[in-house]
Length: 124
Image: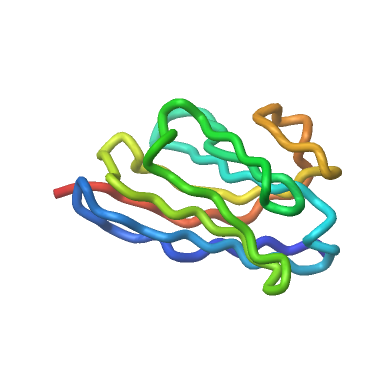
């Protein structure tokens, strides 16, 4: 059974940092691309970032480029999202998503499993 468990969310002041983790199990993590997506209160899902199987190819949404860093540790079956210079508009539930293959990107059709999410709140 595929499981994706996010952690690391919380309340942080504007300008602060958080590191999210996504622990994966039930599949061969290193064979699949992964993504982070988020959903702000009252809004739809927004794709944030994606990473290929080896971690050498990465892409970001314009809204987070230069502030967020996606990475993965295939030995630990874990996906990360380092978030710096956080803004109130980054407030959302953050989800990790597993690609159906090694392909990665922003299209929802690429992904087949999602975690339960972790809440990030940026507020003073």
